Image 1 (tube, protein in one colour):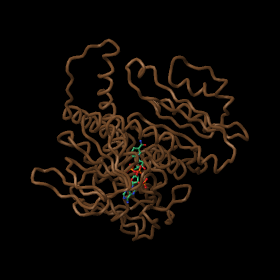
Image 2 (image 1 turned 120 degrees about the horizontal axis):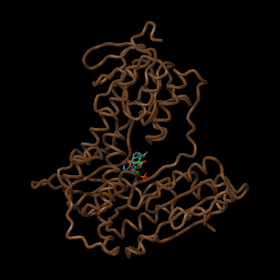
Image 3 (image 1 turned 180 degrees about the horizontal axis):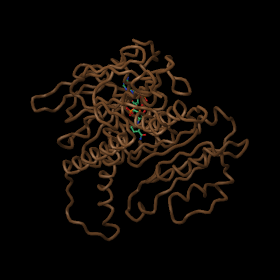
Image 4 (image 1 turned 30 degrees about the horizontal axis):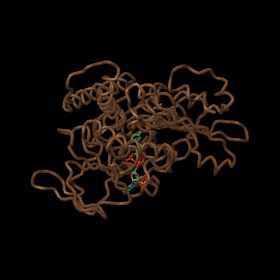
Length: 450
Ligand code: NDP
């Protein structure tokens, strides 16, 4: 296709969305180049979902080893070696980065490992000074942690740095009450840190069903995680011994070994030359796109976190796929369906959710039926662990359709993925009831709710 352009597609940012879009466009016959200033793979692979999940697995051994005794296993004194886990995780990340690069190269995608800027119509200039042209440009530059400004904020870390720490902090303060704060609170707590979460409101995981949020809060408190609600940072001072003296509003100054900020993520749109060609941005700096991921400039598209639609890897991948199929494929253009997206928080225990919360369903549908199962997993019973799971199912009373499932319990994300198909497909409570249980499992609660 590349007629008068060097490339049919130039992708800026090789994360989840950029990789999928580039690979699929190339498979459709397009001549594709992609630029990445950091590491191929993006947030998810390099410093997000993937290494985080590996740490979650590592953290879980703390309780598993403790529980093993109740199952008859005598295990000698256990010690935890953070550096060993960290280095295994980081080397696997490098392996995955290699696989991503290989996939693109196998599809004849030209990779530029440097920053790219839009410098004119259909024109991209690389950091090395090389200028190339492309018929289409895809911006898939993702997002980065947002760090509020206050005196001493230069001393904090974000999730980016958490994977590279030299040691597990003895005392860590984590700011934010969302995904990252709760996931890392669970991880560090299991590794033996004294964890304190500070949030500007008294809500954790806003958007999730309140019953699940309450349950996580209660379990987290039981595990020794401390919460400071309705407060913010006044200042941080680095002490001579390297520790951080932190002043939060309404609290006496306290000493921590690390302060980690997890207060949302902002789209990476600065310095890309978007203003040069007139790409319209939203209030948070996100690229405004239509249902087909097209920006206000007709040959520039954007997918993933940089558009601030739904900041989740599988969504970015779908958006990248839909863009590539629509622009370079032979079929009709199609848009990604952003409704009913299942999600999970890999907290300790994890949360998984799809569809409407009880409150949303009552507001939107009026009459709803709510089913609940509040249970103690068999494994916890044997282990003597007093930690209960909670499943909640929301049903539209008008047509019996299951419009939401919300779970907090071991393996909830693994279990929910299957149930999410049923919710997306519009199945009814009667369909769930007609399904035979798999016994004994936690998942069987889904078909046994009365
Ligand atoms: P979240 O949006 O999940 O949570 C942000 C938290 O920070 C909230 O508690 C919010 O408070 C607080 N906050 C927001 N703005 C400010 C501010 N200006 N000052 C102080 N506090 C503030 O963000 P995360 O950083 O945890 O994660 C970013 C995104 O990454 C998530 O939204 C998610 O899409 C994605 N992600 C997904 C994961 C998964 O799928 N398992 C894992 C990790 C990240 P309040 O709610 O009180 O307003």
